[in-house]
Amino acid sequence: MDVDSLSDLATPWSLRVVVTLGIAEHVAAGVTTIGELARKTDCDRDALARVLRHLVGKGVFEEPAEGEFALNEAARTLLEPGPLRGLTLDGHGGRSAAAWSGLLATVRTGRPGYETVFGRSFWEDLEAHPEIAESYDAMMGHRAGDASDPAVLVDDDWADVHHVVDVGGGTGETLAEILRVRPHVHGTLVDLPRAVARAAEVFAAAGVADRAAVSGQSFFDPLPPGADVYLLKRLLLDWPDEEAAALLTRCAEAAAPRGRVVVVGGVSPGREAARAGLMMMVQTGGKPRTLDEFRALAARAGLAVTAYGRTPSGQFVVECRPEAGSPARKAGDRA
View (cartoon, rainbow, N blue to C red):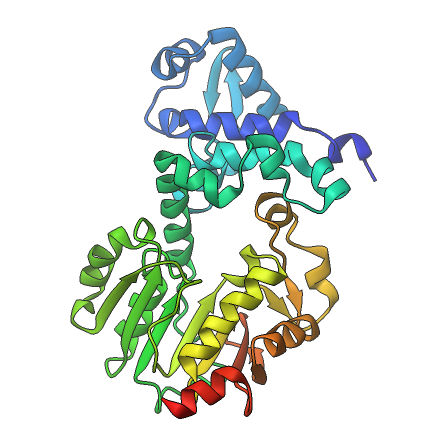
């Protein structure tokens, strides 16, 4: 094992710098000499050259002639916008990268290191800096668009599903895809007003605007009641147990007595969950959970796990229903 390579900070930071500066895009457009690249990006020529030569040594970019740079296969991946939004140091990407310096504080205290680094929680920081929040929402929306698999039920049987509430669904890409492929289904998107601001555009582009509604609110407040499915896709991963239980309780209240709560992402059938999610630990205090850990969390919210399994695309899905005798179920029966 090469411990020096594992502990190298120069390479990941150099990658983030060239992504932020758009170096790959400039080279692809024919700007290849270090002088031209420095002028285009308003950078110091020598410093930029040293960063690029470091990456050349790691197999990213080539230098076919002194001071002239070219794309290779690895560098061409930097032209792909989706996965690289998180590497850009402007906005949310820079915040996330800097938050790693709080890992030691997290390990010592169990609290998100983000608070130590920036003086406020991740969510408070988004509220305090609209430009960072905008870049975060854009990144999450793009990720949802890339992975908006509409097969979010264990058996993929939608015959009895007529209304889906996408809880914490951001800009609505996943819900739009669900409605697009299932014309009989209506949907409601629930997230903060900031996050859902682009939803109308997303729904219109998918041709589902007439079947989609938006509720700009905190998902810790009461949710729109009476839907058949309450979808939480990659949402519980962001939250510690107390907040996750509160969120599931809101879903149970709204779903009772006959609805389902469907969790996609953040739960796994084995112990691999315990080996993942360090970014969430540092950033928000959230974590992935094993199926047994999720069962216990769901029980606190008055939910019973009724089905689980993988979809054809490999997503692990857990379905729950309000338990008979739970406060949420009793309230739903009275309604």
